[in-house]
Length: 269
Image (tube, rainbow, N blue to C red; front, side, top):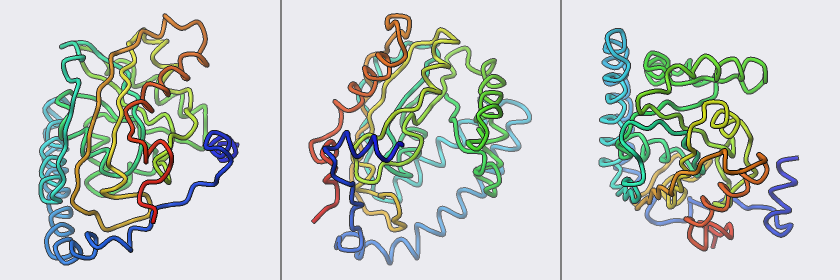
């Protein structure tokens, strides 16, 4: 059903993934990736994951910032530049339900390393078992949901509610998975329901350029620039129905994408 809706929204044209193997930048970057970046990912993930697990026994808030250092460093050694605009729209001490589009793995590094606010991810249960990374996320208090069971997923979100106070926000990818070509996929309701239940403002965030750095299905990042645009927060109570609220947030996030991303032409020949 989701695939049909995505096709209808894009004019009936099936999305084609980009072809990263044809990009010269990726070939030039491969030796650096194999000799430096991949070993750095392994070493820093093990080191900062272990530190985060240890610190979380004392303070989850302090442990969270181990991930910030980890993400900042990996972005730098990847020769990726992150530009965040709209930070002034986040009120200090206010918790938000942050809803953002999902283009690739560098979305996580960009937000974790450069947003400048503490938050908890909503992530799939399978990631909990990833050595060091998943273990640290569990210790810090990120939210794991079992996508195979709606009841268990709802229970996980209910258990997480007490953590979202004092400026600690929660981050959802409402598309549920990475876009194959830059265009927004249909949005799921989980984040919107939580925002209404907790009476928290929704903070729409657009990430642009992440797919060009590392698209879905590619294992070779390339140098590039990622833009994170923070939109004005929205009060869910101002929309009488979830459908109207979802449409508004989706349009807001889409407005921050460039033309090639909106049209699904990222990385095509």
